Amino acid sequence: MPNTVKIQPRALVRASGGPRYAVALAVDALGTGLLRPFLLLYGVLVLRLSAPVTGVTMTAGAVAGLVCMPAVGRWLDRGARSTVVAASMLVRVLGVALLLAAPAGHVGLFAAAALFLGIGNQAWPAAHAALVSTVAHGRERDAALAGGRALRNAGLGVGALLATLSLAGGSTALRALAAVTGLAYLAAAALAWSVRLRARPAAAEAGAGAGTEGPAPRMRALLAGNVVYVFCLSVPEVALPLVLVTHLHASPVWSSAIFVANTVLVVTLQVPVTVLMSRFSRRTVLALAGGVLAASYLGFLAATSLGHGWGAPAVAAVSVVCTVGEILYAGSATALVTALAPAHVLGRALARFQLSTGFGLAVSPAVVTALASHGEAALWGSLTAATLVSASAVAAEKDQGARPRGQRRRVRAVMPAGSGAP
Image (cartoon, rainbow, N blue to C red; front, side, top):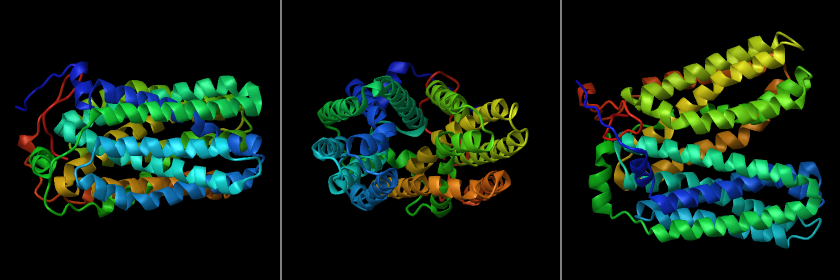
């Protein structure tokens, strides 16, 4: 009979790095929500750059930011934790400062700003996961990671809403948004720095050993599959607006409603679903996420065949299934990496995982739009096939030194604790 453990919400905050760190995450997410959706508009309306130039520059900055990940991984493996998180926030302060300093028509400064914002955005997930893995272990760590994602999505949503409300002010309002974003990043960096958390190699090895599955974990299928899995994050932002507006000729309100619903569901369900699924191995949950996502893609194909009228409501209904798949994926993927990686290479493992995530996010808009130009069957059929192949590869990949099933601990409570096998 598996052990049953109950942990209260206060323990989740403690496992996530403590109250100050939780506030830092919220402030950082709020700042990102203020700027990220409107960086393109900043380039076009404030700096007077063309939309294609602005878009290409933003993409180049995000991709170039991935180059820093090996260095971030090595830095984390030397024991740094809160310092790396704070640095990922401070480098974005520099990016915002360059935005504010850029005169109209200056592509170079905008490119430099996009680069520093890209470095910060790419470095933060690995640094955050490493910090949480140092404070908490096992299923408590999984819940803390899920809680951090829910908090971040809430901050992003609030920030995006505030930014939307202020857009009527034009370029002046956009500059003000950028300035507020820079201050938010600066405050978040100060809070994260004040945590002063560092992992000693010996202590880290002993503490993280509960989730270590061997000296050289096999993660090739996981990393390759993650590139495809991460496409689900672009579905509500890219694929569905494209399909709804250009193919079904539906009102843009449907796209906005789906995006809001996606955010609300992630914020409210990420932790409960992660806790609920903790009775299963992380690898099983990740494979299940692929199956749910593939089913939703087939659902989108069926929904779009209904045409104008019923098509948009059907797409909105299927988007809930896609969001459930996204929640399952987000609650198990990073958790599986932290459970598989030995403590002394945790930073490099998380950096490689972020490389696969960042690459998938970078190419997904181009891939989605290219597939959509060939019709609904090409888009949703290709995504379905690729996701099923990835899920099968993830499920088939064997963990080294996996714990016997009877040693897992079941969590049937508000917040989980204890250790569980990947």
